[in-house]
Length: 309
Length: 309
Image 1: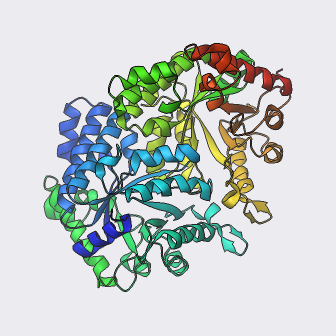
Image 2: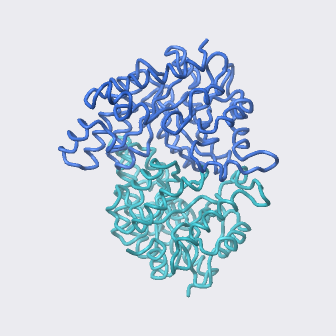
Image 3: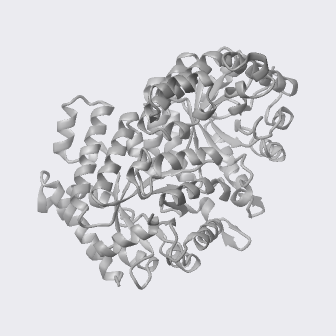
């Protein structure tokens, strides 16, 4: 079995970039063609779920040759009820078949056997069929304590899966609790220390372990600080693009081999058809070309600041 | 529209107790009759989901005349994939039709429009059909910050729904982050202060607001401390019974009217057929009588320590 980090880094080196395309479908932002077609099928949760599934699969087909990974946001699918959950499962399997690493962004967290149930549901690891939602990795919330991470870690290790634990999130109010200082360090540094320790204990011969940290691009100073504090922890960096983080901001997350982080963009890529210059360049119907162009532009932008070995 | 806390307190006063029955189905713990019947239907995720649905609905039918609320644990349903999600939706609707308040224990948490999507998916509020999973209230995790609670609060207020924000959880390792002291107070007290403030601002003429706090029964001293610190916040107390919390421990969560808290028991009630004295008293086939007896015993046990007005 190959570890999550082993498979992820192989994908990064093969694609020569660390871009993660966030699959955050919202019906009102879908290309007009899709909106009208599915609206005509009766504007039910099931038809919206079918629209999300088609949209996400087509995005995947566009970006699969370009990037190592995608990150579906579970919430937008769950908003549509069980039909949305089925669409999410189908989207994840489609991405796996296309050779992409899939990070399911579900931010789960609970105790004991409950945490294990979430892990078994979402964290398939190397074999996409090992869980109903066949993700390689899952985002999790550690507020409940180190012991609540263990069931997720155990399932991940059994299956070659990975986790991304929320350390420093990208929202404006993230500091309210995360910046609180105790024993001379912020809360996010205490969470970071726990995550780093997990990777020290589990990474084997890899430079990084399979238990990453979510570190928002909107706090560039904290990326620098956390990179130093977590030398064996890979970062998942949200907040690039629409939320204001730049390639220069995120460059500090990477090592000299171009490894150590993956950078997510969601709206900036999947809804490229709605924003300049892509909207003018491709028009409303050729939205897949807009997605491809926005993806290539992000890869190029990152490439200016991150050297690949 | 009646507020969540208004509807919950009416149910508590009608049933004369504050017991919440946690619906945490696990296939290996189901009554033998159900296990063998559904195993014979092919041991698929779908057949297990059907078993969970039947089991949960039959629990609901037993406890609906006795208690004010049930708390399905989303994780055990999600472990079974989309079929489990459908079962969860059906179980919630069944409980609502039986007149029970439903607290969906999903511990969601995310930023902005993502948080709103979770809220719209789970938080139906007064009208059970207003969301695909028609819960009255939802458990949420505030690690990401006060701003990430706002979309949940907004949807809850639009629909007459409630939230329970994780403050002090019942697991042995909960203190690793929650007990960290900054500005002279533990992290859980800082979270508590935010939650209390939300209730002060939103409760209107009710003594408590609709935005509760999860406070574990396994930390009785913290129940006392938090009750004093959060006079307008209703508590959801897990950890009674199987996790070691006693009726005496949780009594401090209540006011002199017998309001201010709901006390959850999951395994102790739903798997009563597996433990003394109920296993001997009722035998394996009459498991519903075991559930009824365990529920009545918990109500009586709480009644010794909590006076209802």
